[in-house]
Length: 195
Figure 1 (spheres, one colour):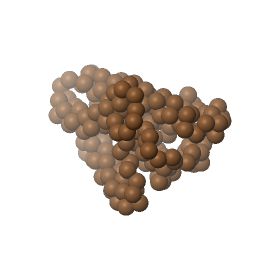
Figure 2: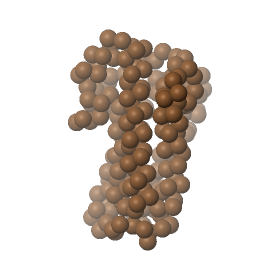
Figure 3: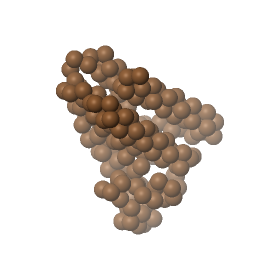
Figure 4: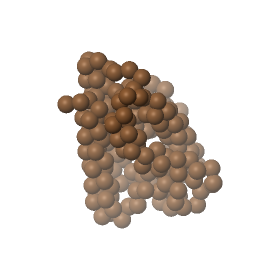
């Protein structure tokens, strides 16, 4: 099976699992997960969250275009590299999902200005303050290396920059809403693994 097609299937399964988790597990508990661009926020935060939403929404389209237009590829990874990048992609998918599951009812996409959630510092959150974003970075980068064309590489760079901006805005919000508890956590745990 073509490695790029396999990566598309992996991502479709990931989206389906996330959709089911979000809409059946959390929604039945009255939790609104998607807080992107919603609530009382500065225009800058809403802009960052808009581009975060666009990055997530456009990913399947960019991947589909990349899949059908291999003539734009900068190089073709050999079989070993394809298997390696697929393994890295699967790691990113698993890490992202583990981060979401560890957050449980505290999981939100975007800054939730209406509810006070508790700080989660166990599991993958003991290694990274933002393991979900780290998992997404790993996914985007592995996909770009698996299917190296200018469109996907540009989309990856843009997505990583936007998600990093989102991370910084969420950390500002957590510092304000959780105070010293978050500051101590921030001082002892890296933003991303090893960074």
